[in-house]
Image (tube, rainbow, N blue to C red; front, side):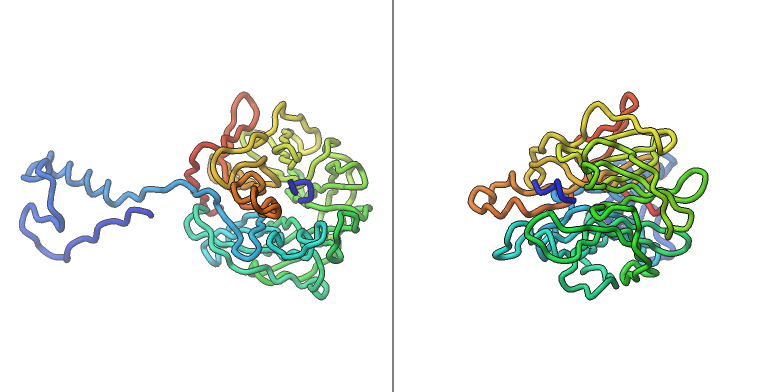
Length: 364
């Protein structure tokens, strides 16, 4: 969270139902398909299949841009079966805030919502999450982590108690629940034994219960973890990864568990068989800035959606490398959400941000 400051082809309508003369077709028919016989029929069927099969366009760059403050970051994606859509929650940094002192623009932030009806290819702004915590005024919300557990939605959210010019304020993680992904009720604070904890990620344990990973700034910004059987009482388990980083995400893919961190130099990657012992990948993902407009900085705080046998990396990019930044020194505050598809090679993860991405997120 902090270190990152740096059309489908529609099928042709069929003609009216009922008897039609042999060879009738509602559009001019290619001569190759005229006449009777199986060959002509097979060709016609082939044409019909071609016309009726949807084609998919690649995801745009940027994938999503917040229309309010132009500061989308720290995405967390879930599928909403009630709305039959994907929902993206994100930190809504106030990048365009006038006369901001220091890092005030990263404080006082709401949690934005965007929705997608086409499997994650296009996104529409849908306001902000209604978070029932405190008065709401002057409170900072960062880095939502949203999960569906036990018949309801859970959000683990970083709270900063005010708007500050520097990074020195206390921070904590709170637990909220929701029935509709819109209104979030306070369920309790997550006691982790430190007053400087941010960026929660929750994943079920193979033997039951859940594990929460988070950044502990009191311990050199290392990644710690805690376990719980009920999502209410958490027992600190120690250090998961000593290397500095933030925004941990946990996925299971290609026979491994993966821990992906914002290393402020691209995304650090670790793999494990048991969610406890982690092996560091020799190279970071998205370390090199991209060439496309709006993608020309290191990738930051990401979420990963595993969809079938594919996995998609949703990361944010600050806009300091864009042409506008040359004349507007505040342009670098802006950030957008991009997507890349994860690959698997020689036992490790890859991500080529220059490759077009045919995003097709499937309902879980």
